[in-house]
Amino acid sequence: MKILAIETSCDETSVAIVEYGVRVLSSVVASSSNLFYETGGVVPEVAARAQTEYILPVYKKALEQANLLISDIDFIAVTVGPGLIGSLFVGVNFAKTLSLATNIPVIPVNHLVGHIYSVFINTFIGETVQTKSVTFPSIALVVSGGHTDLVLLKNNTTIEYLGGTRDDAVGESFDKVARILNIDTYLGGPKLSKKASEFVGKNILKLPKPLIDTKEIEFSFSGLKTAVFKEKNNYSVAEIAFAFENSVCDVLFNKTQIVVKKYNPKSIILCGGVSANKKLRELFLSSFDSVFIPPLYLCTDNASMIGSAAYYYKKYATTNLSKIQANPSLSLANLY
Ligand code: KG4
Ligand code: ZN
Image 1: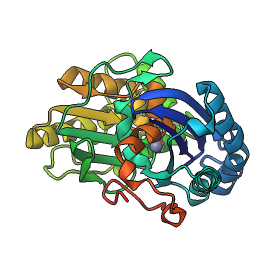
Image 2: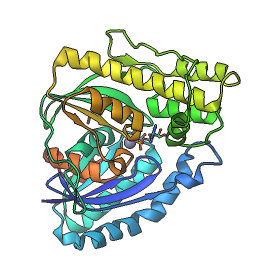
Image 3: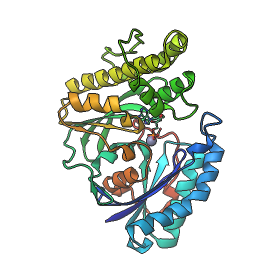
Image 4: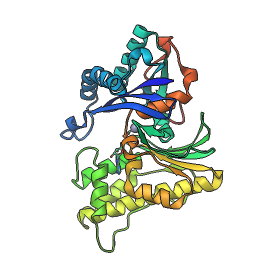
């Protein structure tokens, strides 16, 4: 059972072929992020124009890499939201056109659900990724550029929303702080983390850890960004980056621990772009028993995770293409 998956929710154009939700047979990701360092953020129309150009060659390359023809494919999966509307349109319209030409049904996929199912993948183009399977119930912390959410997975297909951020998402705050500290203008999260790892000595600066001990399942990161702004001339860039990363990791970890105590899950999932963060990965791996974190190339946006999620949501497959619509306002609280 092979699914050809398409992901174009932000500035990536990605197509992957995934078998039985767990085996990635091919994966192609084209990014236009290099276009946005000057503007310091995605210009939606520019991203969508690049995706319009990339989608066909990326699709052809994905089939070629798997050595398959479109007639070998059982389902087409596509990210329908959340994301930038113009970008979502590119993937959704491509999926619908392909379906119209081939009669292959389309499975609509929520991008954030996709991030969660990135840990269900056990083979990536021949390489073993996970040797054990996720056990249920499971708690998932989804940390990306646009979202910070905690959810409960009761089984393979039942997701219950527990809570999320009141303001900035964690990836967004990494990126904004990287800009404040002049580390990078766009997607500075990884570089900020690298700067933090260069800090040596005893750190004096302590930054706030917003809502760390409250029982409510909610996050707030905008105040932390303001605190960095106030301190930016008083400490070295490395020390501020170190203190910032510490605060963020402690808050994410503590909140997850509060939820774990409450729900007593059998496993914990850490996923989304920020799950590429080394400190956060190490903290989760060393503190919880059964932890699932995607390999680095499945943390940030990719179509493989969309193909994995689609397998578990086959009941939404349809050839009635009017049912497949881009919806930028989907979330983990509003799945479909
Ligand atoms: O999931 P993703 O690729 O896109 C969204 O769905 O938003 O996440 C991208 C986010 C960006 O904010 C990026 O800076 C952040 O993930 N990120 C990191 C790291 N790698 C990516 N943040 C901190 N440390 C990292 N190593
Ligand atoms: Zn994402």
